[in-house]
Length: 584
Ligand SMILES: Nc1ncnc2c1ncn2[C@@H]1O[C@H](COP(=O)(O)OP(=O)(O)OP(=O)(O)O)[C@@H](O)[C@H]1O
Image (cartoon, rainbow, N blue to C red; front, side):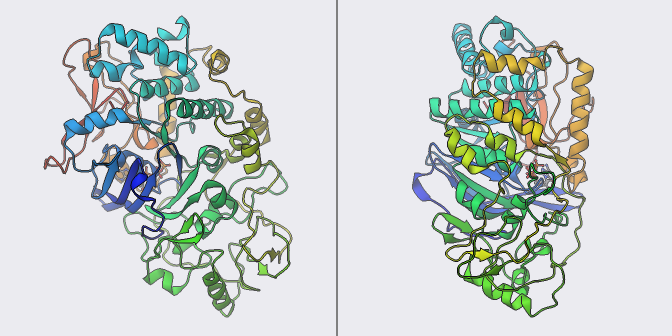
C-alpha cells in the first residue's frame, strides 16, 4: 500500500469482496506485477471509485473481478459466492450479473451490428426469443436516452462517442446486472458529454439498484460519483475511505500529490500545489517496502525495509503509510527529517501551530514545525513516464450529477477553491510559505481549462432525447471508417507511452478494433480491455480477443479472451468468451 492489509475491509455485507488479489503478467522482460495483494469490499448500492496514475493497476483489478485476466492468486467473492475458482460455465453466468463498461465505446461495439441488436447481444447469447429481444431492446434504448427509430438501425460508426457509450451501457443493462464495473467510461468523451454519461450512470444506478465500481484516472470524475474511494499506486492500495474525507484531507502523501497535480482554473496559480515528480517505477521490479517511497518527500529508511500495513487514521479513512500526513508519526518523521540536510523539497512543508488557520492546499501538511526534507531519490525510475491523459477534475465535479445533490457536488469542488483542503485535525496549521508553488505536474500534460468547466456546468442532467441530441451533434457527420481507424491509432499511440509497453503488447491487453466483416457469425467483437488500444491492424491480437463461430446464425459473435483458468486446471491459453464487449 503502498502496502498491504485488511483494516479497511467491511466484511460480510459486501456484494463484492476482493482479498489479496495478485495479477502478474509474465513477459519477455520479466514478470509484471500489475496488482499486488489488493483487497477491498464494495457494499451493495455503493459506488466505489478506484483512482491512481496510469499503469497503477486499476483496469487489471476490474478485469480480474470478471476473470478476463488470469488471477495469480487471491480471493474474489460475489454475492456470497467465491468466484475465483469457479469453472468457465459458471463464470459466464456470473458475467451477466457483473457487467463492465469500457473506455472506448465505439471500439467495444460490433461495427456490423445495428444498435438495436447490439444492446441485446447478451440476451441473444442466452438464446432469448426474438420477440423478447425486440421488446427489451426498445426499452433499454429508451432508458439510455436513445429512443425512437433514429438510433435503432444505426451502426456504431454512425454514433458519436457519447451515443456509443449509451449503447454500451444499454447493452450492460439489458442483462440486469447487479454490479457494474465502469473502466474509464468517460475518459474518451468530450467534457460536456462526460457529464451526461455520468448522470446517466447515476440515474440508472438508482433506478436499477446497481452497485458500481468506477475506475478512472480523473480525480474530479471519481469524486463526483463515488461514495468511497480506493487510491492505488503501482499495484497496491495507498488509501481508502469516504470520498469526501480522502479528497478533503488526504492522509497518504501519494493521494496528496495526486490531488495537488490537479490543475486549477486560475491560470496564475496553475496547479493546486507541488506536483508529483518522477516516474512510476517499473512494475517489473517495484521498490521494496513502500512502493511509493522513491517519490515520497517523507520517506525514511523504514519505508524501504518495511511495507506499511493499512490502518485507520481517521474514522472511515485508512492509509498504508508509515508517516500518514495527519498522524503523530508524521511529526516524528518530519522532525527527524529536519535534522537532515535541508534542501528544497518537492512538496512544501508547513508548520503546525495551535491556533493557525488552514493553509493553502498547495502545501503538503505535516504536523511538525520547520521540517524540510530532501526528496528521496532512491532507485532511479526505470520506465517511461506514465501515459499522460487529460485532467478534467474540476469541470465534471461542478456538473450536476444525478443521484448526488448538485449542492453536494458543488461543495466538493468549487472552482477557484483548492481541490484539497488540508486541515490537519485537530490542530490547524499555519502556512510557512504563503505563495503556492506552481509546478508542472508529472501526471498530466493535457489540461482541460475553464471553457470546458463552463460547458460541463451547463450540461443538462438529462438522459432523454435532449441529451441524445446533444451527443448526436458530434455525429451529424458520421465518422468515416478512416476516421475511426485514426482514432484507434491515436489511442494506440497513447498506450505506447505506458510503462513496459513491450510487455503490454506482448500480453495482448490491447483493445481489439472490430474488423469489418459482413458475416456476424465470424465477426470479431471487441472487448476494449484495459483502456489500451491496439492499432487497427489486420494482425490478430496476441492474447485478447479471437473469434468463435457462433452456434447459429442468429447468435451474435462471441469473444474469446485467451486466458487460463486455474479452476479448470487448464494451461494458459484457455479461452473465455464474452459477447460483443459485454460480459455476457
Ligand atoms: N497483458 C499485460 N501484459 C503485461 N503487462 C500488462 C498487461 N496488462 C497490463 N499490464 C501492465 O500492468 C500494469 C497495470 O496496468 P493497468 O492497465 O491495470 O493500469 P491502469 O491503472 O488501469 O492504467 P490506465 O489508466 O492507463 O489504463 C501496467 O504496468 C501495465 O503495463
